[in-house]
Length: 151
Image 1 (cartoon, rainbow, N blue to C red):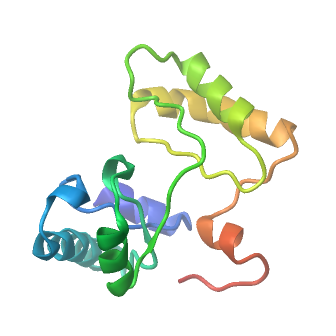
Image 2: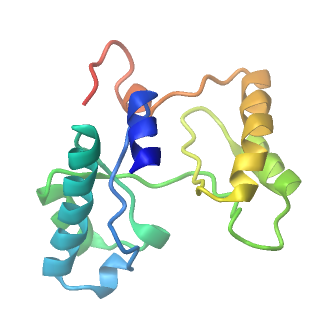
Image 3: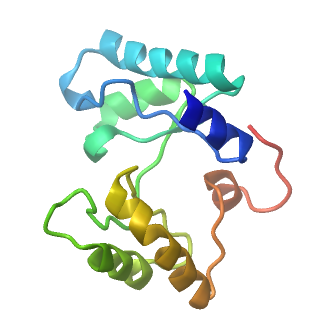
């Protein structure tokens, strides 16, 4: 709860990812709804904000049916364009930096996890992307350029 509140206080957008990280294509529709609803309720209780409209499928595991269900629940499924696979033990902090900085282009969405390797790589990633002329923005700013209020 403290981290989620800090994220909200700092102006980060908070999307939904489910509560137990299942493969959504392998669970029944009732559990899909429960995964999203439980996370939404917890984030709303802690921050007063909604996780809508953004949702990312754990493992990127999705199909037409679960995408339609997630959409019907008010979410827009987001996918990434750069995956540094920082969760792999064999990938060093430097390889994570190189992957993100080297593979990112205009409109890139980078998949990252809250793990020590990501935290260690992030300052160099930010510096490297800025050195390449990129501006880091929220999903809302990426998808809806111009003045948009907080969702």
